[in-house]
Image (tube, rainbow, N blue to C red):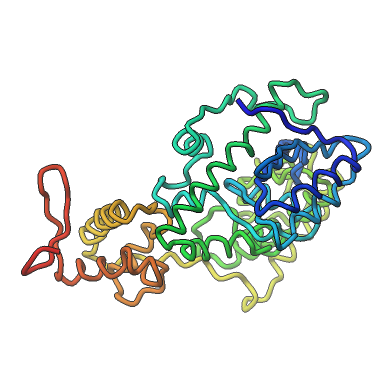
Length: 390
């Protein structure tokens, strides 16, 4: 159980805490938030810890200004350590317009160090810190005050144990020379485009495999309309209109309020409300879009005929190589990558570049061209180089 911590509820106390944390080489960070009824996540708590201090910051306290914390988040001299950082980073980007840096994500680092795909914080705490997390407060309404001591202890555990997790993973990365293996994943986390949904691109989040460009043109306008309205009202996308409703409207575009009322996906009364006319305008923009400006269908490359068995062998090879090198398969290649490698030796996939090629790509090509084979030895599968042992 985590020991004592500071509970920060005013700006003066936050300034003192930040001054103390600036002296540390790293700080661990986590947030508690709610977004069930909003488009933007509502920040409820920020937990931070340095090597010798831990604190819970209450952003809902009436006498607090978070600017000192936001300044710390972009201080280049202090490493910010998160676990599964994306949602936390989205919050800080919304608050300050900047992404915390420099940045270290223990979930990504754990995949590089062989702890498995998308390993949970709870698993890392158990394996590295030899502790068990109390998850009984996982579904707390973090907007309510006051919070109980049990809730606060739950929250602070997300950064106190993270110190040990970070230190062990960093030492492992240094020892194995794999620090630069994180670069690509960290670049994705550091890219604002990872978190900002442009309305014109929002349709790409909706699953559809159609090749009808006019359908996609209408869907693009409908999804952009929903994104803009949801942001303006700070409401979840689905609260405006669900994906199924947008797909139905794109497939059967209404040209009037009366036609919109016939759509099963549109809630009763919606068409007659304030948003009905603007939704019709979005449909009309999609219908009027010139052919050469319509979206291109997403290309799903099909594996060449006859490569199915090879792809299955490559899956075995991927598992074997990743186990041998102690790295998560998810970080090296996915099924689409394997299909492309099966069909093209020069496929433009990460698995044929950099350290991933050393771990798996070269071995995959050797298997494809008969230079190596997979063999069973008892319960183990091993790689055999034809003409001699691998």
